[in-house]
Structures are given as structure tokens and as C-alpha cells.
Image (cartoon, rainbow, N blue to C red; front, side):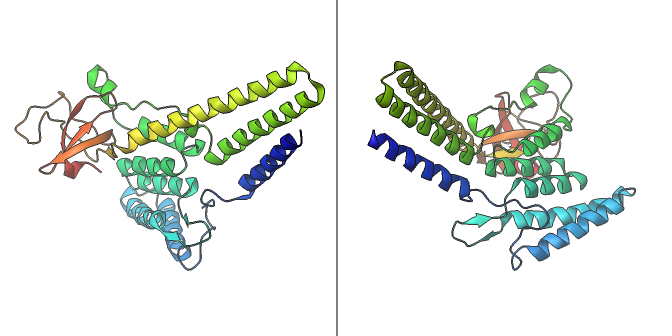
Length: 286
């Protein structure tokens, strides 16, 4: 029984540690930056963005301002600074800022890429998930036919897209703590219901572990085929040259997401969301 109390105490301590540590980058909205590294760039990005909003009645003048803001947000996204836990400037807020700036600058493909970058860093962000769905809806997919079905991406629902690693760790710790307490009560009372409760908690813990294991496998499979986005309308061909016939009657519209399978002679071998594969010039893919 004393062992059960010790395990419970250690579990509580571990949960407290998880809850108080910064395992993910701190939120980067409009002010949280290391002054020496990020503040001037952030200020410049915001100035250009605000200027673009002020010129929204004249797209020819507004878009260059948004493009300048997007360039500076991109720079911030790539920056890091040293610390007890290595951190960078990658957060849902900054990813949204990047995506919005690129979108308002007229670059929908890069906006979609920015949202994918954000989701790679914080997969459970509901704001980024919603923004990606909205951006995908703006892509001019071919109406009807096989090409539309091949081009439209389908989301893969995993536990990592519904909760963060910290939330998963806290849930796992809570289930383990509940199991330890139930075992303790069983030892004290000898009532079978406490043993059953402990078994249920352990079963839940095993299920959660299985879901995270599946999530890791999905992420490894996705990482093996880098994501890219078609930057301009392009014909998907059956081979890596203009002389090869088109895979579909219509070109792929800008904004279509593909997975890169390989490259050869300035062409990329890509796979569409529906599974169809073909070749695109590397110059039209980001």
C-alpha cells in the first residue's frame, strides 16, 4: 500500500512538472519576442501590414505592402534563439500572420504552405486547421470529373491533431494516477470494483498510447514524402518532359497540394491527394 502512495505522489509531481514547463514555443502574437532578434523585424512586418490595410482600396499598391510584411514574417519564422529549452519563433499566431500576409499579397500557394508549416509545429491548433480549410476552399479546383477528386485533399484525423503532446502527457499521467489510487483503495477495502476501475484506467492508458503510436507512424509516412504546392496552373504529365502526354485533360490549378516522390532533370515526380501520380516542372512547384 505504501508503494501505491509513493507511485501516486511521483505521478502528481510529474504532472506538475509537465504543467509548468514550456515544451512548446511561447505564443507569438504582436509583442512576445526577444528584443535583440525579433522585435525590429516584427515592427517592420506590422508596419507594412497596416499600410496594406490602409491601401486596401487599391490592390496594386496594397499587395506590395502585404508582400513585404510576408517576407518579414517568413524571416521571423526561421529564427531561433538559445535558452534552457531551445525555442524559436514558430507559433500558431505567427503562422496565421504569415498566411494572411501571403494571401493578401495574392500568393495563395505560399499562404497554404505557411499554414502547413504552422501545423507541422503545432498540429493541434484549431485556428490553423480552420484557416487551412478556408484557404483550400479558395483553390479553383476543376469542377466535377476525376481531376477534382484527385486534387481535393482529405484530412487525416489523428490524436496529435486533436491534442498537444503536453495535453496527451497530462491525460496519460491522470489515467496512471487514477489507476494507482484505485489499486490503493482495492488494497484497503478488498472491493473488486476498485480493481475494475484500475483496469479500466490502464486500458484507457494503453489505448491512448496506441493512438499516439499510430500518430507517430502517420507523421513518419508523411515526412517521407515532402509537401509541395503548385504555384501556377500546370499540366501534370506522365513523364519528365513536355513531350509526354498530359495525365489529365485540364491543368492543375495554383494551390493544389502534392507530395514529392522524386525528381529528375528539373522535373518533380508528385502524387496528388487522390493517389494519382505524374510529373511537374520544378519551377512551378513550391
